[in-house]
Image 1 (cartoon, helix red, strand yellow):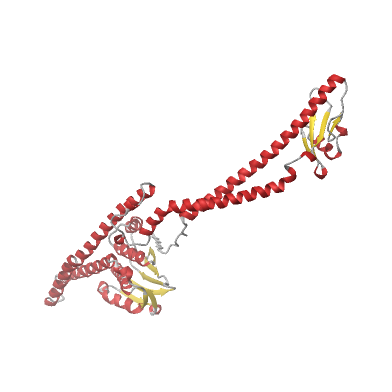
Image 2 (cartoon, one colour):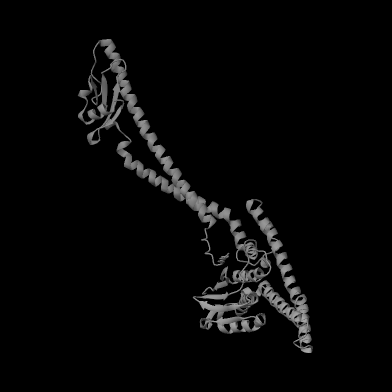
Length: 435
């Protein structure tokens, strides 16, 4: 069964656009004021309309009550007291500009006519078929000045928005000041350079809680970094020394004993293990040292480093029918840290040599990608699961996965893109960033 594994690491994510908290407070406060002003203006305008209609309806009702009382007293309908009001005994006598509207909507009591005329209709409940029509265009107060009212509300809303902007600016600046101070304190500063205590400088509110939490976290990070530095220092002495002793002992034994010695194969395995341990220790120490991040990248010739790495790990191909091919494309320059590039090649090439028992190992460079292929046994399902788990949880695995775990950390360290494909053999690609 062919195992397919594609593993891409992207460390160059685009930074999210920065949004100032104080500016956001000002913006939202202004939007709130605009919305509130619009709602207030709308209801104010509707209130003026309703009040005007109520006054007109009261006038018409008052006249209708007068006419009804006179009808009861005199036995016939009197003349209306206002020239703008007329009695009608059939809808057919309504003014032309709203008669048809009445027939379409007989329940309406307010109608708009031509040339700005406005009508109110009153139906006498005790005298069906008798109507009082009032043409109230000359008595309208709000409708003729709608444009003025709109302009007033617009100016009023603009003034409110300016006032809201000033208030929001002052409030936002005051509110965000301690938070900005906290952000300036921790932004882009190495944990060891942050003061041991700083939370007491912030108010006893949510920002103070955040400051105290950050202070505690930074203290824990500083302690962890100190422990890592101590481990790096101790490991450089404690691990390298026994490895060097083993290597020297193996070299002395090989010099004093012939090649056909019965223990030759066992001693060779010890020598290979010692050299692999030395490389692993050196790689981990390089990754653990912070000063590597400060080294600037520069143009580096790839081919000499590839050739040197092949020579350094050629012992892994002893007595193996394996050919090594290096493409002419490798005769180029890439932008990288030379030491980190050597560590990367050492791990990838040693892995390819170690797990390829016959066939070919090829090294190529195409479109800013270093490609190393082998015809080995590939990565087993169990190992690949461990590699995936290490990618998710940051844990380490064994065997082939341990080397790839180191490469994974190194690619994260240098913002390179790593791709691993395994089937009949393994193909590892590393895409280098151009800057």
